[in-house]
Image (tube, rainbow, N blue to C red; front, side, top):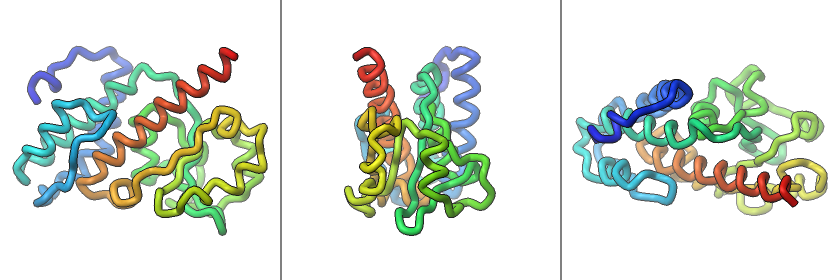
Length: 203
């Protein structure tokens, strides 16, 4: 952990680290016993090992290091516009105060509805189209039908890039120690989204 904590960071990475620490440390600060967190693609190996081997009382420290690692990895990534769909019918999303919006920010994304009031505001299809998301995320418990509405709008950037991703429900749905794994999955999805965007632009 010391090696990760001492990593040299640019000013942009340091800012991302502060965001990441704020977003994730609070989910571990209670020192929850039994983390249930396992290694996953996108989580630096040393961080995953630290989480698995950490004693309950060390979880706040582990969370800070993990948040720093995730945020530093995404610090130089090109921002990408994200729509997080909580529910399809009726259509709900998250605002900037929601913990998932903070995770999106840690991963280098921009929550297109961050400015709305209420943690989970009701929105319209038209408002999504107006804000032109490049990525659409939903929980895996919604199934692939979560994106059926958007397949009608083939000109939308997210559809053009093929950026529709389901996030693991158990890990992303609540602010528990498993959120670290969910955050890694979200960061992976946004990195794949950037790659898809680059390929489409280069075609």
